[in-house]
Image (cartoon, rainbow, N blue to C red; front, top):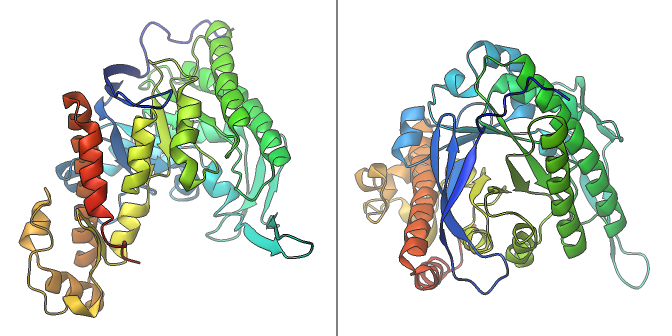
Length: 422
């Protein structure tokens, strides 16, 4: 037992505020997630700052568009500039000039997707098509960890639970995630079950390494380690995975002095069953356990996640589509690079809470994107992050006021009245 681990103060704390009346077994809620660098009013969206930057925005702009926290990526920062450099700067928040709460993901998704460049192959032999997954030779998964080649220069690297936790401790985020195995919807149930077992084995090793790093780095701000729930679309696997993480957390509190501070719901998720899958997981969790839904940002998915118990969300989509000339509005996406906007001198969106959407016109943004000017990407990114943050604020207000169902119907009815821009 690591008796010197600090246990007299929490790394993070979640306090539920208002419970949403919902037909599902889990139900959503508002609340407050307290971290060493500030509180997060939930439900909340966390923009992704992959390389310690939300692309195109300064930290001041990130704050101005309503963001409460940012999420950086362990895989990318490990490769460039290196975790030690970030540590020397005082952690990812200090490195990028952001004073609020920070999250880092484990790098597992990128190691097993971006680095591996996994390809999906459909075998049409037999009476029905069988979907298979061809795993690239760039990545090798075993029970100890993952060997992969960098997408940047092809150099060889190895991530284990211990390496991932070590990197994330050097990055210094308030919330970090345990190293887990990425699966896809194309993996069969047998493989999904094996991945859950491997993820749980790695989760324990993450807990052990987290306790050791916390003790060794006692002068640093406390960090919270969250487990990741896998199991794809299978209810029995999702529920058993959730219960398994809780058992590991209880064991860690007894043996190591600290367990999981929350959970991430990740892995392969069918869009049509997203709410149900989130509900399976959240119904197994204590109320005081914060739940982060990894990689989700479409409005209908956010509503499905919220009403089934998810508290925080992250995704690259709002910033990515901004860089490709699309902005969110309450009437759906607007694809500003379309020729119809070349002479459209209306403001971008007068209903937006983002000042840039009032200041600049659609014709101007069309011009900026056609000219390849970086300002266009910055403006569109501000608008999109502000839009998702405002949606989360409106959802919080609707839950607290008891008007969630009416707000959801009105918002989604208008947003999806016409097909989203492609």
